[in-house]
Length: 118
Image (cartoon, rainbow, N blue to C red; front, side, top):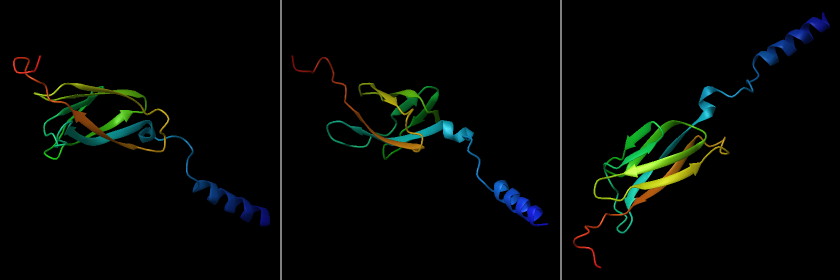
């Protein structure tokens, strides 16, 4: 009888232990942040931020969020009319405990070649 009670107790403890397998969401991360102008630090609305097939457009406060990105090297590309395209190479493969990465991205205004000093 004692053995039966002990086996039942061990079985019930094992039934409630968390699984050690990675869930599908552990393979992904999100990158969020803010796009600002290099010189003035003004937030840029409407900048297109892209990593692989995931794209977002910054809101009126410059915020963007890219979700469900694989935990691997990512190339972030940021574009906005009137600004130089910015590309960032990011390697998040070792950050298994951080599902959300925050970035500040700064864009530099394009200068008109006719009015730029020579």
